[in-house]
Structures are given as structure tokens and as C-alpha cells.
Image (cartoon, rainbow, N blue to C red; front, top):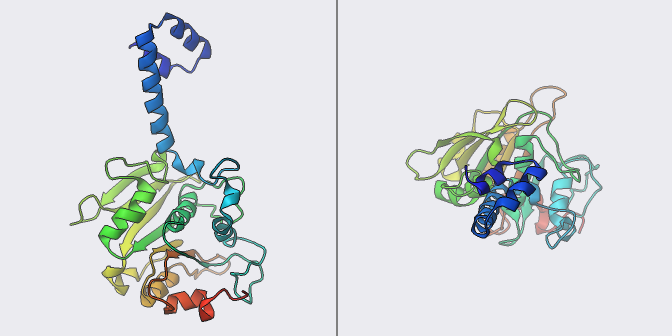
Length: 274
């Protein structure tokens, strides 16, 4: 083992100091390069924990609508976006309807990942699950899902674990047939014990593919056809007395105008109490 490798492996600060004293300048440079690479790898594989920080240029206070989106999933103060009959209880259905490149997909995937691994930041006031969950995430077609949701959650195909789901929580994946580098399902280690599961689905599979299952979380990335939305909502409905239903989260730009799905969230095309 080289001095720089031993240095990286050592948790003992005294031992680190002793090794540094013995190292030559070129060995110190090599150690710094190794340390920088190791740190970048570690940060890439723990991206989730760096989002929405208390301070800094990306501090949470700069994203009030994103934080509100999370908050209204749990007990909350009534907002201009709540329906008229809102009593402050968590909303089962939520949609982030906005323009491009404002963090829509990232936000719903952030919340999904918190539920999957059973971890919530200290500031979290939204919906919580106290067990492993099952989830479906859906987009327009397999390639679109691969390039958006899959990369956001898992990272690039050759860098599994550099998305929002920490690498240490990814137990395994299965491939989607006939679509290169596309993932069909992911098994995720949960802090509650056991494992959560995510299944990637597409609108072009048709309404029937969204039938006959019970899940906890339904994610629609890009606006779904109303029939598929209805099926997704049905899948999260609880049939057990006293057991809360699951949740539906959408993230899309309303390119189809005032469609049935848009109007279900924005009657008349605007926030209910605006």
C-alpha cells in the first residue's frame, strides 16, 4: 500500500499527520488528487442530502414554492393554491405546474426519494411514511423516462448511484426490454427496514398498464392523459378503514392548454383563491 493510499484509508488524525511528515512532495500531490476524486465521488453518491440547505447560494429560502409544494402534503397553513374546502390536512393530489427548467422534476423526485429511503430533512413538514413504500413513476415514453426520471433518480447509466437515490440505498435494478440503458424497476433499501420499490412506466403503454395494483406513490412527469391520471389516482386509494391513501404528484408544463388534468388543479385556469 502506498503512503497516499494508506492516508486515505486511515481514520486516525495522528496517523495521518505522521504519514504526511514522511511523504515526498510528489506523494502529497498524488494524495491530494486521490482525495479530491474520492470526495467528488462521495458527494455525487449523496446528492440528496445537499439539496435545499439552510444557507448558501442555493438556500431553501430562495425556493418558497418548492417548499410549499412539499409542505401541503402534510398538515399545513392554507395557501392560495389550496382548494376552497381545504382544512389544512395534507393533500393527496399535488401538481407542480410551471415553466421549463425551474426544478419541477427534481422536486417530485426529491420527495419520492425521501419516502423510498425513509429519511426526511429536519425542516420537513410534508407527508411522511413510516414504512417502505411502492411507487410508480411515469412519463410519455420509454426514452423520455430514461432521459429524465431515470437520470434524476439514479444518475447516468454508467454512473449508477449518482442521482438522488444514494448509491448505498440501491439494492438492485432490472432492465427494460428493447430499450438500451433503460431501467424497468429499482429496489431501494429503506431506513425503516426492508426495501421500497420503484417501477418506471410510460403513457404509451396505455391505460390498461396502470390497472390492477395498489401502490403508495404515483408520479407523473409531464402531463398524463386524463384516463391514465384517473387510473393512477385509483391505484393509491386505500381500501382499508383507518389506513390513509397514498399520494399522486405531477410535474409538468401545461403545453396542452386547459386540459381536464390542468383544470382539475386550476378550475377556470387559475388558483382557486387567487
